[in-house]
Length: 470
Image 1 (cartoon, rainbow, N blue to C red):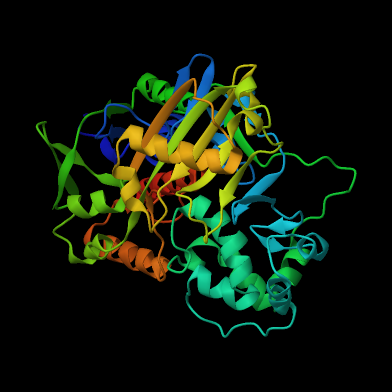
Image 2: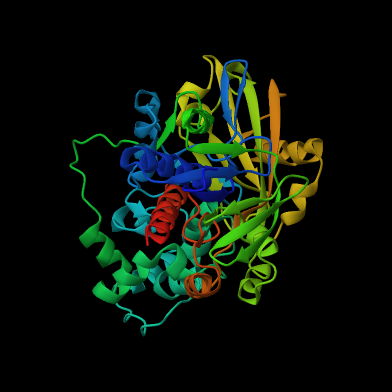
């Protein structure tokens, strides 16, 4: 490294770290800044949980399969690296809830399980009349007293009652966070619902005021986007862009063990490799990894107690004639009261038609609810057997699959338990005091989705440049 140039080191090569590195080198080039970037990743490939497999004409996502279009940073990154023409929107269709061994259509006119149209809920078999009347209490209950935080479960139970929560809201939200909604923080996950209650005195009234109404003639379109050849193509393109940049070096299979502060810079110890010097650092690693790297700082010990759930998914391929009575729709989630061990099943060939060859069916099932973490540690054959038994009971599938693929993600889903926002804010304040120029980013802190992680990578990029420019 030229003595006149300063080095920004990004630790963690998931989508957060990749975004930070990409936009850093871009700005360094455009503004002719005197900085270099080093990206350090512990594994042999970049991308974190993004992992696409191509098999016999199938496009299989082992990790996340898409991102929300309305969170614009992901689509913008795709465009910035030249992959805009590969964007694909999900097909829409009926989704279901599995309750008492039966698949029930999710009522039309709901937003994250909360009614915005009364009639579909009145005629739904998901709820008893008592449950429907209790949900209607949202119109009349006073808003809660202002408070810093509370659990998602407590908040929704108070507004809508247990039935709506356990039969609809919980399975939908658990599909996002893979957590216990009675522990998850409202303000770290869905603060907009708290704000609606405070402003309108009712969730239903608030959503009717704020959610855009579609014209009846307007065809419903999918809200998710992905890439034709899989999300790993974004990772590959980002890696290519970084390799071409004269300002970036990428080091894989490099495990950071320790960071030591030395006056106005930092010494980074990498297992079995040469130490490196950094003038600013972006830590885009899971919270439990960050805590180990900075174990000498007491203020990070709070992250030892922060849970992270493990999940697994099983992808099964079938010939179409083997499942002749396949329902129309995009898949189902499983109610809290179910005895099944799967938590959801996506009918991938319906939701993402481009992923599946003609004449074939692809199902992607998920396991690993908070109360059933041991399933993730079973063998591939054991997990597949459990999933196939559940699918046989739910969808009457007796046929043997043409292929199967089991993927485990251990400690992959950080849990934003009550008080999470305050803990993150407190940690960042301590970082400014004790570790100036070191910045935290990633799914452990301010959002777990791909766009949230990209936003955090961009934010860390801006923080590092602002720090060095001073």
